[in-house]
Length: 233
Length: 233
DNA sequence: CGTCTTCTTGATCGCATTCAACGTGTGTGG
DNA sequence: CCACACACGTTGAATGCGATCAAGAAGACG
Image 1 (cartoon, rainbow over the protein chains, first blue to last red):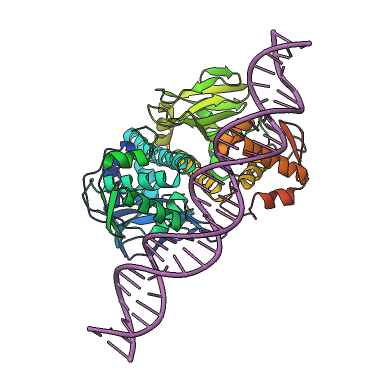
Image 2: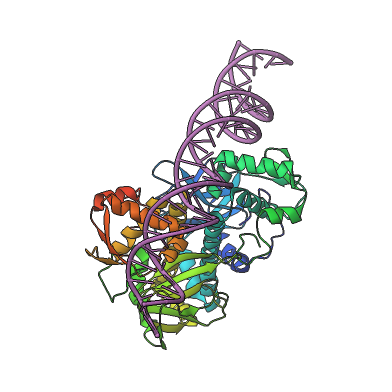
């Protein structure tokens, strides 16, 4: 959930995704630990794997590669998030480290056993997946119905909030990653950032750090007035 | 799955979605039956409901309404499909009849009980949801990375195949619905259809019926050479 | 037969892409 | 330490796709 390099920070309230985290960490505590460097592959597309992964620290990107080599990054994940739960056998997404990562591995079968153990557990797992579905839908709406700068603004807000609205926010991902996530070109992402900077809505002391100078206007730029469908909560 | 007005036709092979259907119908057999006419609301957005629904016949659309009144149709569903399983309490999608429909109602709680009953059942339900997630991802890629006419072509292929590649295929949904689904305007959908017609790839004896004249070229127009990520299987 | 909805076509406009060039930062070897 | 290379980021100018605005055609229905 959090595209944030550090450890456990206070998260903004999110429904099922947060409630299930403690439940799932219960089984993820046992398991191999993997350490990744930026660019390392955690899961190859189409790979056959019995495992899924819980991110202890760092940020990963979940992507699909298209026939022409383009990448669609479906989401970024951070501390506490589960990835690689695509399918019982075949992985449909690739997952790659964006920053240095520490990741725990757990067999997928365990999830099914957990689901059977109690009504609450099965409900939690179903709601975990439903939450992902809702995120996918919100992402679709955001990408299809928002302009380039609205998408960039919304993305900045998301990262900013995930890092606890800190005055200095770190962008773990490259411009290309942001572009691949928001379905834009790298140039358009740059231009949108420049525009926000010029208008004093944000400041960027360096390419990978930014400051939210005017939250109210950034919200306006993101084109959302606390609407339930927005990607940010 | 099938945007098809008739009863049970032979479906193109699809992984989890198809395998789970018999399992879920087992509990959907008991329950109220509702009959809907085109435009009737099955589920209102944000509604609180204990029920989910299995479509016996007809086509429904699942949508979200945006702040400005636009609609994003996330998917169309037909015979055998389950809808309204959004969340344990609150519905995040609206669902509305596109054609005349017969629909069975079943309490959501039943699904959780089914999930607990056996390892296979819980696996089936998880895979059912994972299949929806995969569909959502393929849709995102299709909408963000394909041109207008590629989207329209891909959509026609989907409907065509769901109706068993019949020589005369029925379009249950309006141009506006197609536009709302493909994130286009109604005019662009029309123009794409006209272009396909002019080039002899399809024929349209009337607005709601079409014939695939040249499957090979329609596939090319859809911009996909049997790639695993394509929305059509 | 007229009205209403849905569909189609045309003309123009604007946003994001594309192509191209330039800047910036970082690491490596001389 | 500087020089160079190379990846990443930024900016500019031109192009094109789909949206918008506007009007007309074709069904559906009383």
